[in-house]
View (cartoon, rainbow, N blue to C red):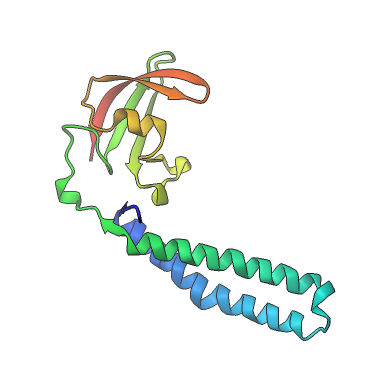
Length: 157
């Protein structure tokens, strides 16, 4: 059973662009590498051939994963996003109650997550704890380093 992947328009475009890149540029390049290595003779001891075949396998696996993700993708309708409760695509300011430090995360699908950009996957422990909560709510989150307590300071679009 395929899990539905919720994406923004930008996320959908990025997946399509990556799939195009892999299919139209990288796949032919690896095929050329395999053909070149094959032309060098004995394949049983040809490290170039083995490396190219391994790279081809990894590439085909990535292409397959992207195809499945795109097949099961659903665009998120931004017009239904509000700030009453925390939901996907919201930007959420949360305060660590131990350190009083406030951080802002935007909740996104796993495919769009990028912590450097402040985009947090909805499948992370913190996101799971704050989804559906309201401004002012406090949550307890179990993370690998222990228990953390947060307060939802603000919910933005």
